[in-house]
Image (cartoon, rainbow, N blue to C red; front, top):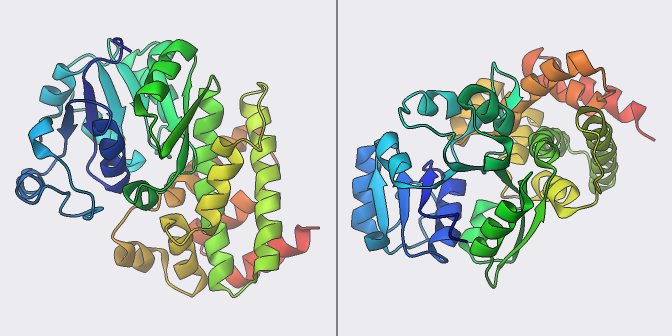
Length: 331
């Protein structure tokens, strides 16, 4: 446990706030990087994040806030990344501190645009962080439910299972149940794909497809995810584990799912731009659909649901037409 040391949280959104909540419940203090000084000042004054999960109150005396990413990273041995994937590169470019000497945990359920790399690959290639110093936090875990203290099951993935176990033990509580895995890449790709499939579920919801079809859609999405994961990272795993299927199901069905909400708006006839403006939050599956489509051009896995979502979002093909074609391919 001593290897964990001081902990930094990088990011100021809802999931970052939820992660900070359960980490601070189990440690004496945290360092927290948020880019906006006005948000930090409001946070200190109100004792809660002024923009996200406002019902979660913090003992701000135990939080070292800073809008200087270097100040926060310098102080800590463990760094938890909870920055939306489209903005990760921009924030990390400000770093002058070497990340390779830190234990870096990515809680980002997205892919780095343009690079088309999951976060662990990006950190390893661009910052030289050894693979056994990179972990991923996955599993079905809506920030809103964590905020309410509802039972949540998280998986810590790392090639060094002792380090994974240390962090899993640290964050475990009466409502946070943890397990470990060595399948870092598989967990990350599953977390990207489940967002894409949740957009598909939302589109079908917006088009008034019923629960019967949604069940078939999720069944086919599970099979599609399995085929992709077996191709990109052929290791032994169970697709029915909560970090794979559980995360897929909660993101596809829950009213807390921003990707499902985004998809529902598209299915109801909103343009992509209008839906993004109205949501005011990042639907990572939008970016994930393009990145995964680009990655799969080299792998050639049969992924009709991914293709359908990509065609609707980026090729502007009618959701009615695309989902009808998709539904005809299901059995």
